[in-house]
Length: 374
Image (cartoon, rainbow, N blue to C red; front, side, top):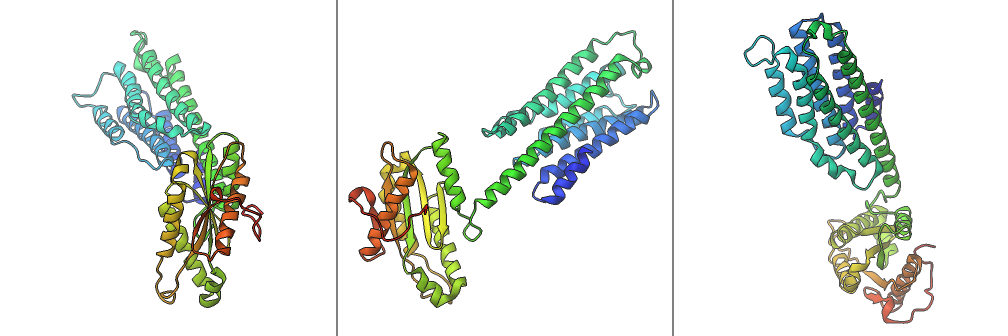
């Protein structure tokens, strides 16, 4: 059932490679359980097949969680599984005695999970679902450790044949089912959460430039209000005579200019919150620790825009912009800072365009036009 759900999730969104790995893990795990359930007591080769499939299932589960974070199964986990499978091969000198085999199986699975737990702590990324993933892996590791201890104290008088009808056998299969169910449920929840978050991100991205749109801007404002980050300053940018570019080169040419400007802003403001608010208007929200660099960053942005060059038929196209900056004062909302940066932009347009103006260097009046949040 979990495998089918994960396959459906992967088919709906082929970027969810973790769902495909999780589905394979469930199918292989089902094969391991089927072989173990159908094999006659004392059948060594079928037991070896079941154990090997169990190790492969553990490896696939680890891979599915790792792929969710753009990583891969640790090589050490693969090595442990391969060596263990060779050691457990029947009728060879290194094969452990029957009484110790159950303990070693648990310890092998535990060692495989431990190879990924240190890096899994980085997967929490402040999200509840990330902590849930780490918790599920930790619980799986603890369960294998407990089972190893439980099998280690198994009465010596109990034969391997008796084991098939014993409390220990019930414990083994029941906890295996619980572990698999829990990991599958966590994986489904995690991937479902990822799909929803990705959908939300895509609706907050301008499809032409890859920058944030107005929705992303409002998210940033809400994050500031909730204390998740602190906006200290704003840079507003409005391209000069963009309508003339559209009229001369068509909307396709105008789109190429907008993409070029967006790439230039991404280069100047690496990792910052950059939004395209529609048409030729751009807005950058900066953290408070960059307030001292606001004028220099604004000048760099203007220089990067003016340095843009395009291939034919836009080889004669030259782009300029008016740039306005505003520092957030104590008690001032982000909307007010944006309004002041807009005023500085319009002052630049009235003074000849192609320049940087600071709202903090003059007492601005209301601009002749709508602000960024209008």
